[in-house]
Amino acid sequence: MSRANGKKEAIEKIQKWIGEEGLESGVIEQPYADFQIDLRNPPVSIIIPKNKIDCVIFATYVQLTQEDKKGFSELKDKEKKMEMLSDLQRSLIGINVEYNFSPDLDNLDKVSIGKNIYFDGLRKDRFMDSIFALKRAMAAVGLMSQRLQGRYYSNSSTRLTIYT
Image (cartoon, rainbow, N blue to C red; front, side, top):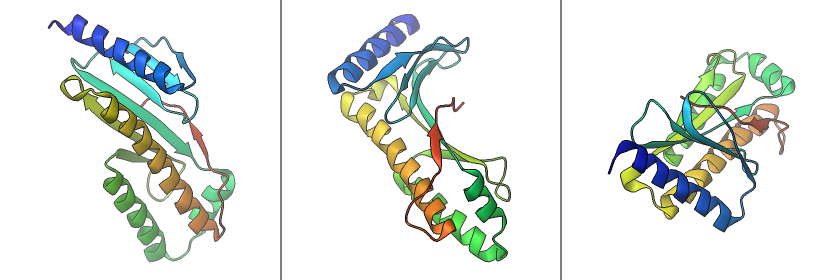
């Protein structure tokens, strides 16, 4: 199977599965992607990048609110701050997603989350599990925000982004 045919077949599968599951979405034109579709709920971008031969990337991020960022930066006990981040990292590793803290661990603003599937493993169950994994990862970041503020809810919001 040629590279173009593999990507075309993957795009057809993705669009079919999104339709079957009734997920609200919109196709986005990007110069670095052969295909990108953004889901609305959960807010996840699904990308087939031009620079990859046989890969689907699932990406999202959680943007911390000003209140969450303030609470995090005001944590005086560095050990407690690192313990909280370590707990989050353990959760994200357990969920089996890639992640990145921006801009850095001391000045946390957002957490980017991603997961890849290669075309030879592209089946509907793995596709949907990747979407659910990103949902679980977003929830883990939300729980960290709740813990940070000592409350049972968070105002942190999820936004679409590209994770490359």
